[in-house]
Image 1 (spheres, one colour):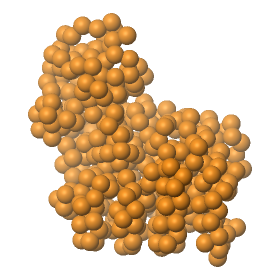
Image 2 (cartoon, rainbow, N blue to C red; image 1 turned 90 degrees about the vertical axis):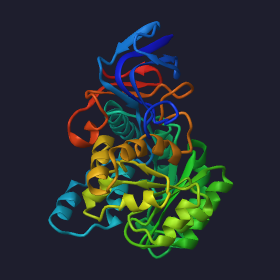
Image 3 (cartoon, rainbow, N blue to C red; image 1 turned 180 degrees about the vertical axis):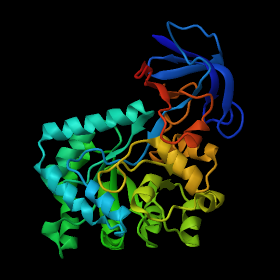
Length: 387
């Protein structure tokens, strides 16, 4: 069945060959879909079997959130309150969530994850990546990957999130477990493997071992890199051919040169910097160096409990020195590039029919009206979700 999103005041295609400027803007448009795909961009008034009127609103691609941790149990709001009172951020709270997640039933974990995914969807996120990482043993990591596979086809195995308490002082032994039995149990449900390459997590040799084992098992690569300070994570990501290096808060000129000369996307997680009071990335410096960038939510219980991509765009514009156009592109097409996908993050013939109808005449409101409900209606794979 064909569906037309008609009476679009301003259509953001994220394809500059299709319209004005870097976002490929088309005015007074209609977006025609057939099943899960877009088949045409026409002038307003196009015919189809079914019709949704945008009534002059702005329509854009659904957000592509390329970094989330949606499957977990427990609460860490006390950590947030402590940080706001002046306690410095560290990644040590992960084990608090691991304990709660291991104790939760599969049914409860599944219900919590579905609710988080729905919250993201109704705010305009039509595609997500979802990581494991709160099980940290074979049984529970497999369970998390299997639950994540019910939410997306971009599942990331993150057994190398941190070294669990039971392996304290035996990091290499834990890496052996991750690269062996744990990977074998999780790979059937995952597309990606990730590692937290950071002081206090996994060192260079351990990170390379995890990434190379994942590649040998048929998984593609991602890296948590350079969040807490200058370090080797970005260089490891580039040298190993990872699709993305995520966080990228602390970057040397050498890191920028490596990223700019590679296919590795620098994925910014501004809500994490907001929640942890870390410094924000100087995105202007990164973009001007020629690096491909993305914006993602990093939705997780400890350092970024939000799936609101519009909030992340507002932070990127205000505090990371991005233009609104750059931030919108990073939260849509940039996320798709970080996931090495060509079907999402843009709108035009051949793209997936994932569209966000804003309750606004322009995408600029995503940055200028932070915290406001701007998703008027969401179309996911050709199906209207929110009215």
